[in-house]
Image (cartoon, rainbow over all chains, first blue to last red; front, side, top):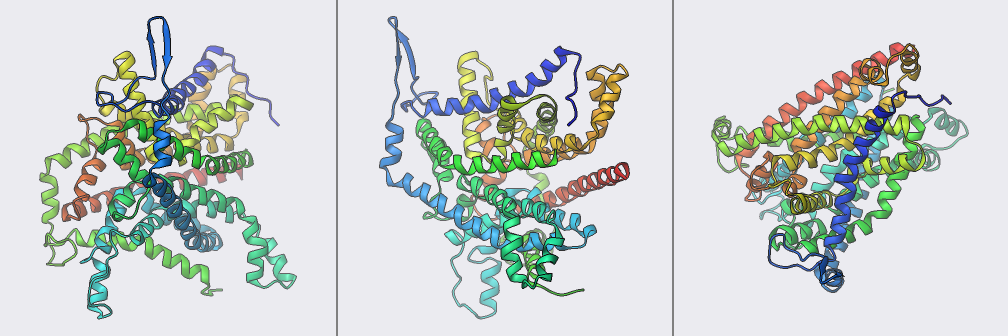
Length: 301
Length: 271
């Protein structure tokens, strides 16, 4: 191990360490504390639309913690169903991405070395074009007079257009389409490091290719599977744009409900409480992802 | 050996799945009809309409400005964070920083957006600044979440470079400041460019965080597109989408070129 660099200018070091810490504490950590605080306040009609938590009057500090927002979330089945809907949506889409993405990543990792960069770029390219635009593309494809229905009607398979847009099916298609590249990238990173001689050894010992896959390839790519799944699962739980544009009234997801509480009902405390509960649900997947990320960083070090 | 196996078929089917919607989008942008999916002959009139739409043009300008400043700030903050993570911090401090910097990578956007908005409201309450939410607040929000991506890209590069060059420069009497700009920056420049471009495209693309952080003063392009798309499909948006796809492909090509050059350089230096 190399000895750490000794910087002779403590003042410079102070600044280099201080600026990112300050920025992140200020614009990342502190905002979460505020969300937590607002989630305990009472909504009122004013600007800003909540009551202050701490009041200092007549030499006494009053702290009002309003648990009503959390009780409301527990009580009202609409929130409960929205959380459940989000978790179900995220689980099924993650499995869908994995089923499509794993073979793709595997094929890229097995491709000739000089083609790999090009192929992975082709996979990533759509995710750099506007997210909104890609979801919008599906509106034109899935609608009642859209490409799919026109094609099916023309071929005579159906006489009435199928209702696909504004259903949960459309949301699944949209999510899998949008998040597929995020599944493929970590899987590829993992599979491309796989030692090919292990597979050869298995084959030499008489293992059939499917058996080799289950016993060797899949266990060794566990890290990539976890990272890819978390990269899909966590953001999908809070997804707003896709259910809003492709989903119907019955595609209830928590991101959409939070947005409506905040922008339409202007109920900031309930929106904050919804965010805190969502964060609570996601804390395990986020920790899993961080552990993987930290391990990856140590590996390259 | 050119055997067609399951994974190769899946690769090409997957590529078709990824690209077909975009080609359909581009194809129908040249449609004469107002009904997006009913073909009525070739026309470029929607592009003309697009360039006469003042609201969209204003939003494009706002978005480009925000993206430019946000990605520049993100590169500064992200690089500093990456530097601290790989060079100084140990133990607890490093863990805190790396957790804070990588959390926005997976955090649902509605949570990040909501938390930043509440911060801005509180700050306005306490210090009277920022008095109005607009471009400045969107800039801060975008800089913060883009810095996470920059930190990941730059820190992986910082780990790869040969540290003895930096040590040599310091032994020869260069100040840390000078060492950083004369030695480290040139060595990590491909990562800086890649991080900047990534941040730029992320900032241009963001709808949710911008909607929370922005006020009546500033409307970014995704916000305009979203409110239009909510009403249903429109050929003007198809035309806009085509232009966006074209520009992004161009940027992607440039960043791929830089990445490849860095790769060749690295191979040459390690050989």
